[in-house]
Image (cartoon, rainbow, N blue to C red; front, side):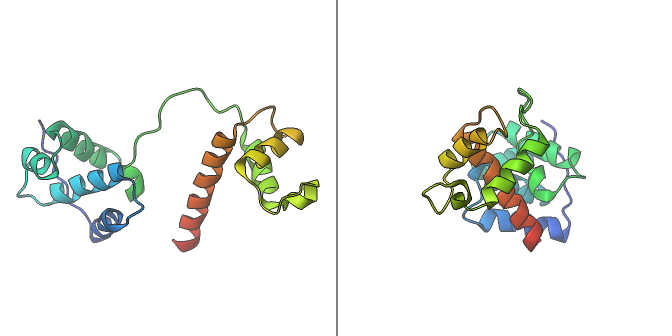
Length: 157
């Protein structure tokens, strides 16, 4: 297997080390960050990195190669899975904006006897308002979770 040489900047090292230390970082990202950090040390080859992390050396090759190929991407994106192919979203960006706006409104504005939206109640109201024909509470929740993290990252970062 090819050993891809990685030369991290100080910023890249600190971001990757923070990912490893943060308890809420998904374990797959932690493992990938560790691969990149170890690959930065020129004294270790793929086999040694794989042994140290108890993983297959092909994983080391995949992630070091991907790190180099995605050099223009944000650091955390470089240790993330590539987008999966699948059916395109049936919800337009405009509809997502309307959903976000509705989520920011208090449920009382819609004569609902609740003070905070649950994903289920919000999905039901989104359909009732005619924004979309159908949406699952899970899909809605996943979308809102992504928006919360991206806004937090922008706000702090």
